[in-house]
Length: 277
Length: 248
Image (cartoon, rainbow over all chains, first blue to last red; front, top):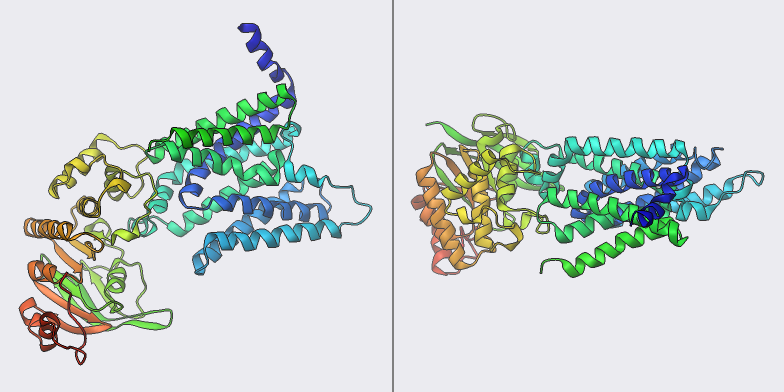
């Protein structure tokens, strides 16, 4: 038994696996906590839209001469600005969040393609596939530090605003009457989501990053009865799914990000079957 | 007589349309007022302005002597049932404690739980304490929300068509409940309603609002108007401002 466990955990002896595990767990926890609010607000597509906006931000960074690793410092403000723009349109027009997200997503992604095309022919070639699908096992110490900082920021801020944000999620009108700054908290939620999505793109890519936000929270929502319980369950499912997916992908020699997302997806479908009717 | 709510020349424009025009009336402390009028007459708009949720274009509203939105927990609000997110994982105890704390309770303390239980007991709904909100009937839901509105011992209750969408039995029970609460509590209330039975049963004062205040006074005085008699007797009232309230 001990030998089997040793063999299963053997990958941890390698630094790049430890970094991948740290990045995955941090992203999983932060994404799951944000996801509880995103899912309850019916904004599941938002994180997907922000991930595509991140592509535009990274491409802008590359156009400005940054490396892929450093382009994240352009993508961060770019994506946060897109998130705030989506929220502005949601609040100031009668358009729904899905419409606002769809417009910003398409424009940002198109801009990203344009930015990549505008780079000079002598620029270092960019691995677009790497941007789209990410590479958790290639997380650098610098990227890991950024991911851990963003995750810590999300946890600290949500610990502070979570109960009021939850009240505003339940009923913005009643929350406002109780003195909750509803609009400010909504902008903050979207900005935090943008931060997590941007740093997540480096690990699992544009296409899959929103799964970290949506799937654990959606799964927990199927099973939980209270918001606190759902938040706790979402984090536990996300951490367990991330760790399991990482080790499984290592031993099976398959794509890490995809295995993690498929693991999280499997828990969702299991919850669909097990949920109380 | 001290005043719970005073409106002076209140005008509200929404999307370029004047919804309220020079509305003035008062509700005394301890008084139960019904706000009636046709759909689109500005009843809910007035209530939201009194809560500080909508800005006034002109005029002023005093709520318990201060500006709307600044009287804090002294005002209890019961919105229409349709205003709530039905998919949110909420229990009745959470909803009541949220109003007490001003934040959603991720854990409910013993003191908060006792306060919620006491508020529910006042509306005969103790058994609903741990019930999940989305499993409640319309009548149970409004009973829970009335407990929520009462938990902070308000001096003024604002109720926006609380029985809309509730079946006839539930409406009758809720009227009994409001009658009990208003008799027991030294609180003023403003009830937006289309329900004539509610007006007859509860109102000490009736305000008929159709953009402007068309009538304001004791029920016997207002209900005795020619156009109102026509509304209740089923006569043709095309020439009149519209039905005061509708029998349901």
